[in-house]
Image (cartoon, rainbow, N blue to C red; front, side, top):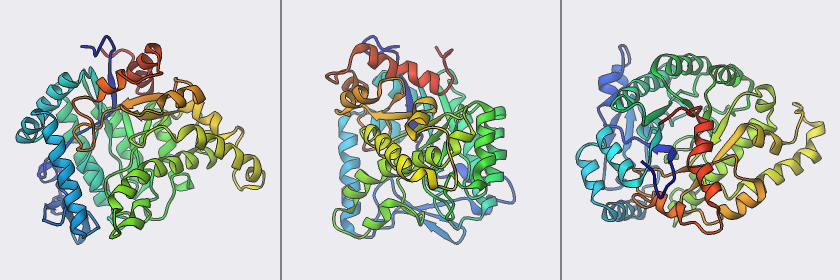
Length: 387
């Protein structure tokens, strides 16, 4: 399969997991912590309140307008193509995902979770429970992808509540379940940043496993340190929070990994920054380099290169398929480190026109489009032998 002659590998396509996943896959003694999902009138369609034991995770804003905005977006996405109704009726199973990939023109996709990410988004989750939720999700995702493992790959969920448990699950997911990446949480969890010393064993393990870490925000604002929280219960907070949160969280995640010394200590660790657009990249690399030159010499942790050099050596960023500033980004930083993401089946994606819109972008050469649609993503995930 190809789209207008281009092979396509989606760096970040999502599952919409069934509510009963954890009841089925959680091992004892953790079954009693299987998440319960409540969908009330105050919640957007894809933002249920999630109850795990005594903890509640969910859409924090109770403004009626927030739910109306989400419902309107949901309805507009379903109106774009009849496959949304088909996929919804089938529970977004693997067969419906393959149908969607055929419609969109995607040859291979790397799967990231939706609910699997959301259930991790509470600082006060017991670390053992959080790790068990991640294990169950990875086993379900392995089974999901098994219907066509040549086209469906997956990134493993790990819990950032306990680095030691995250290391154990990263190894199991890659070595036993076949994960091609490990999902990184850009936000601090329990007050710990990703460049804190506690996470050193995790970065060392992922580097040793030879897979990338894919940093990916979630649609929740339930972690205490989340940029979108400042706009909850404020007018138009959904617009402001969505526009700002993903790029900013990813910018800060890259700053932690580069200026915080992680990439210096782990030169073979590959990182991807997903679902936050790419237009910020040229300015942020310049800004970090400037800040390092001014303030780096007196900092506690020293690095041997400028932050931008670590990006070009070890990192990738995902462009949205319709990102019109891609031409300027390529002119500024080149085309070796950019991949594409469709975000299917989320309502704010572009299905079924994402790849079509990308191919139609003006000012970007076919050679560059081919690299972004396939070559770079295959190199990121070490999937050069795929199809």
